[in-house]
Length: 257
Image 1 (cartoon, one colour):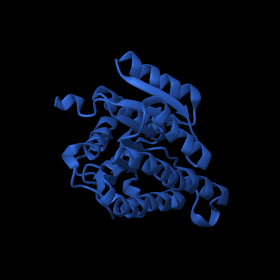
Image 2 (image 1 turned 45 degrees about the vertical axis):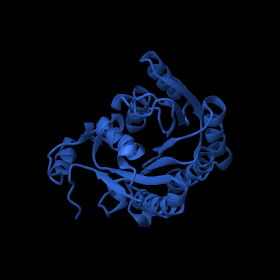
Image 3 (image 1 turned 120 degrees about the vertical axis):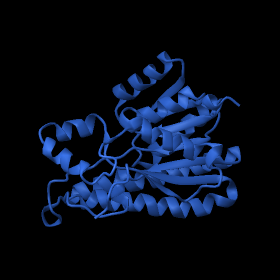
C-alpha cells in the first residue's frame, strides 16, 4: 500500500477539528485517503475547515457538536455512520484551558465545571459512542489529546486544566484495557508548547514568558501542529499495532520540575 494513503477508504473523526492541532490532523487524515468528519462547536469555522480540505482534494463533513453533551456526542458519531458508513479512527482533541490567572482560593467554581465538562467528560462521552461504532467495524483506534499538564504540576494557577488532562490519561489507560481484546486501541498524545493562533496571542504581549518556556525545552523551540498530527496518525496506523494505553509526549523533551 502507498504509505501516503495509509487510511484510504477509512473514516476518521476529529473533535475540535476546526483549527490548530485538530485541523492539521484532520487535513493529514484526508491527505492520506480518509473520509474525515470534523466536529466542533463553532459552525462557521467548522464549515470553513471542511471547505479547505475539500478544496485540497480531500473528503470531509462537518457536524456541529458540544462534546460535553451526551446527545450531541452521540449524534456526532451517528453522523459518521450516516455519511460515511462507520468509524475507524478518532482523535478527541476538543478542549479548553479555562482561566489560568487565579490561584485555587480565588478560582471560579463554574470555570472548573466547564473545563472538566469539555476536557474530561467530553473525552469520556466521545469514547463511549466511538467505541460503540468501532465495535461494529471489528475494531479501530482512538487517540485522546492530553497535555504535558497531564503528567506534572505547574505554576500557572490552572488547577482545573491540569486536573482535566490528568483525567484524560487515566481514562485512556482504562479504556485501552477494555478495548485490547476487541481490536480497539486507545492512546493519548501529550503536546507540550505548540505554536497555534491561541499560543501566539497569549505570548504576543509577553515574549519573556515564551523565552522562559524555551529554557525548559532541550530542543530550544516550540513544536508545530504537524508534529502532533504526525504522532496522532502514527498511533492510528498499523505501524503502532502493538501500542495501546500509551501516553506519548510530543514536547521536545520538556523538563518536568
